[in-house]
Length: 410
Ligand code: NIG
Ligand code: FE
Image (cartoon, rainbow, N blue to C red):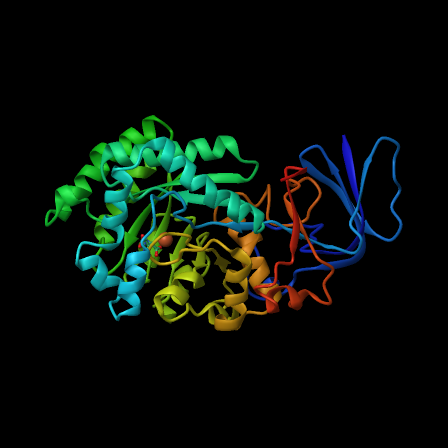
């Protein structure tokens, strides 16, 4: 059955000639079609236009009364499956401890691993689904979810099974990433090289055999995993068809960008401490630099220099990094607003980064990321807006009124 949405105040992010990603000056184009209509056929967008539409017999008509229509956010970096929370560390941070200090004291990621170990798979799924439902209501229509709070074969598989169950139960697109090298598991304390062996020889083959992950990730940073270890893990995962998405340059200039590009990474993420050498390494590559302003905000770190990356011809994606330690929020509109406020991106650049380029960073840009005939009908409707910039300016006003995924209202 076809649906026709009429009296749309404007379609934002309309794209008749889609590209896989937008780079450099292209990021300024986020086309707005005023006084619009849009036809959905089953799960997909069939057509859109402006002016008076032709309404065929049998179409379901949805009168939007001037609401605006945007492509769903594509959140390409989250750790949304975790147990409980780390609100205690929030207090530690207020009292002056840094993220690294909390980690060195045995808190941080290992704290979440302990909690996850003591939580049943059903309960973990229930807690994660609460967050997934929350971000869907906030406009996210495609999401990548990482493991990395297991740190043993059994618990990593448990997390990845929860991600698979989420994939099967929501209308949003879901991609899963194996992040066994998020921290050295407690049983291997002081034996990092042996832990890396364990990741490569035991975790990756089991994850691969059970086809539980689309991608592989490594926390390549000061105090975590080295460039050499990262390359070894990426090579082991490549044998199972998992492309890398690397955590790089969050805590220090880590070499993670270069090893990511060398290993054909789909994305390198964080990049708060990047240098012009890192931008140079990305030029001409297929790797999407993905910036996570939520982590900079929450940890009071520098913001990645997205503006310079775009000026030097690169494309960038924005993602939430939703996780209990460095970004306990998956609100992609707030992420895009922070892109504007703290990285000086234009609203058009921020919205492209949070939609099409995020889709690219999940290898989903043929399916989602723009309002394009043939793509999945994943979009949301907002209150009537005075302008495109108003949507990111009024960042805390609840403007999103309805969400459609694969053509159905959620
Ligand atoms: O992307 N940096 C590594 N991983 C997460 C934080 C995970 C945690 O603290 O639980 C991040 O910021
Ligand atoms: Fe992360």
